[in-house]
Amino acid sequence: MERTFAIIKPDAVAAGQSGAILALIQKAGFRVVGMKQKRLSQIEAENFYGVHRERPFYGSLVKFMTEGPVVVLALEAEDAIRKWRDTMGATNPANAAEGTIRKMFATSIERNCVHGSDAPETAAVEIPFFFAAAELL
Image 1: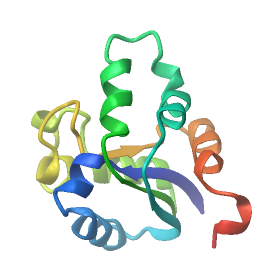
Image 2: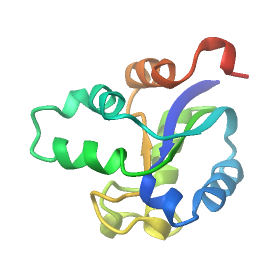
Image 3: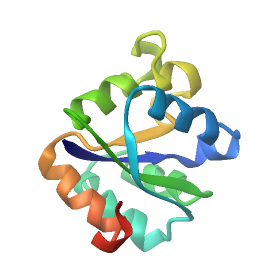
Image 4: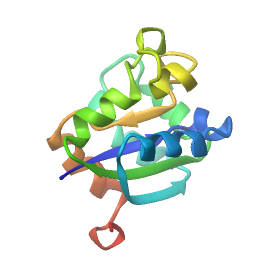
């Protein structure tokens, strides 16, 4: 079993899509081992997305991620990282496959409703950023 990290972003939470996204996560065969709703502080968003600090979209990404509540998740499944990325769909919803979360709910490449770890090394950093070991089932 592998674990991955996911965020239901502020756009999807504000649109009332969290429940539908969670249902799709479970339908895809993931076990939710950690979940919380929270509002990211400026510092949390800056640190979490620090890998993108030099990119032109960094400032707007931090602003977007702090504009409202998010749902952070630790997910478990066989090949969870690849499986979650397939379930999310392409970063740009215009390029996402039919039936993927981003195709169904995202409105743009910047407001793409969900985040997911892209590698085991990333998941190993992202999960403990939001969850203490004792919080995971």
